[in-house]
Length: 476
Picture (tube, rainbow, N blue to C red):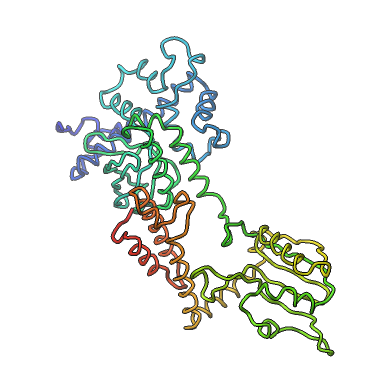
C-alpha cells in the first residue's frame, strides 16, 4: 500500500485530510483502515443507488421489489419493517424489474447494474469492484464459529460449508458461537464484511431446518456453489422468514400428546355420587379405592357427597416416576360431576369415558374453556413460585424432580421430534446431517439451561445425552 501524505485524502473515506483524521492512529492495522474505507464507500454508494432508484421507479419500485422479495410470506412493505435491513441491499443489487416497466438500455438490469452503466466511469476501481462483489454474493445462513466482541467473528456458511473472518464491530457484541445470521458475506483482500444482514439473530436450534434445506439442495444439485444459492434464493429467503416468524411468535405450549394447552372443565349432572364413583374409579388404575376415598366428604348417614381424584393412564417405560401419567382430574360435588383436562382432545376423550361408563346415570351439561394466556393471567404466580422453591429445597423434592428429569431424557433420545423431521435423536445421529441437527439442538438446550437459575440443573442430563448419542466434544 502506497504511503499516504499528511495532506492527502484520508484512506478511510471520510473526506478529511489524512493529518486531521487517521494520522494519529498509525498503529491501526491495515485491515482496520481498509474496513473503514469500505464501509464509508458502501454508505455513500447506498445513498447514491437509492437516489438513482428513485429517479427510475419512484416509490413504486420499492413496492414491486418487496413483493418479489417477500413472495407473499411477509406483510406489505413498511418503512419501519425489521426486514428492511436485508431487503434494501437485495433491492439495490439483485432485483430485476419487469422489462415492460423499463425502456431502452437499462431494461433487464438491476439498479446497481444500471447505475454502473450510467455513472461507472466516475467511480474508482475500488468502488466499481465493491458493487460487483456485493451483487455476486448470494444470501445464505452463516454460523458464528468464534467471536471477538467489538472486533468481529469467524463465520461458516452452513449451505456452502465455507469459513471466513468478518470484521464487524457492532454486530459482534451481541453474538456467541453457535448463533446463526442471514445475509451475504464479501471479502476484499484480507477483509471480510457482512452485507445485507437480517435483523434476527437465530439460536443454534434453528440450524436443524437449515440443514434440512441443505440436504434437499444436495439431492438435486451435483455441488452447492454460489450460483446454486442464487437458484435457490427464494427457498433460502422463505426459510429465513419462517424461522424469524417462529422466533417472534408467542410460544405455543402443548401437553404430552402434542395438543395445544387449553383448560376444559366439563360439567355433568349425576344421579348418585356413589354410583358415579363406582363407575369411574377405574380411571385411576393402580390406586386403591381406600386411597381414593381418603379425603372424601360424607353426610351423617355415611353417604358419599364430595370427592376429587385423578384421571390416570399407566405410563410407558420410564414415562413417570410412579409409572402413571395424570391426564386430568374428576370432582364429585353432590349431584354434579366436573372433569378438568388441559386440551380439547382430552376433553372429548373423558366425555366419552364418562358417558360410556355411567350410561343413563349421567347427563352432559356444558364445557367451560379457558385459554393458556387466561390461565397464566389468573394464576397466583408469586406464592406458587415460593411453594416450588420450598419444595425444591427439600431433599425429597429434589430427588423427585431428578427422577422425572432422568426419565424424560431417557425418553428424549428415543422420541421422534419434528425438529429432526420425525426422527428420534438415536436415528438422526446415524448420518452426518442428522448428527449436526442433534448437536445444534443440544447446544441450544445447553444455552437455555445456562440462563436458568434457582432450580435443578439439566446440564448433567444434556451431557448424558451427548455421551449416549456418541457426540462428546462436538459443538455446532
